[in-house]
Length: 128
Image (cartoon, rainbow, N blue to C red; front, side):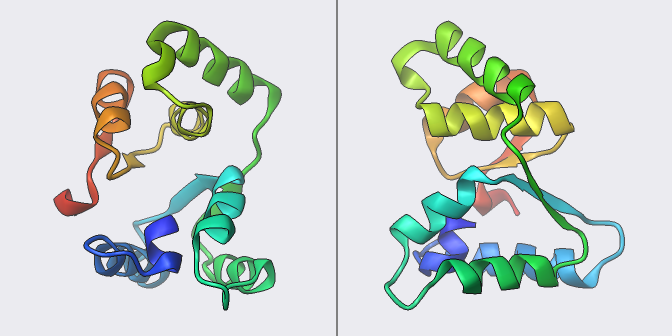
């Protein structure tokens, strides 16, 4: 989602394709942690507002924002305990969200991808 809204290449086009597939196909759905909202707004261009991000995500019928529940946060803490400094807290929350929702994690972060592949389904945007 961060790549999509910030238009950072090389993954912005692949992210746009993924969102388009979620919007158009019945057999694809997407999720992300609510944490991605603050990450997206904080790293994007100045024209992007929380309202615009929220409006776009709400327009996707098969896309859900997942709250960082107590169980997800506890799992994220455990993942950080196991993987140490290699796994940053935001990444641990995203990974814990995917594990708890049995979802595929899509990330360009090579360290996160390496850790995630040991625990759940994970892909790089270039694999899409």
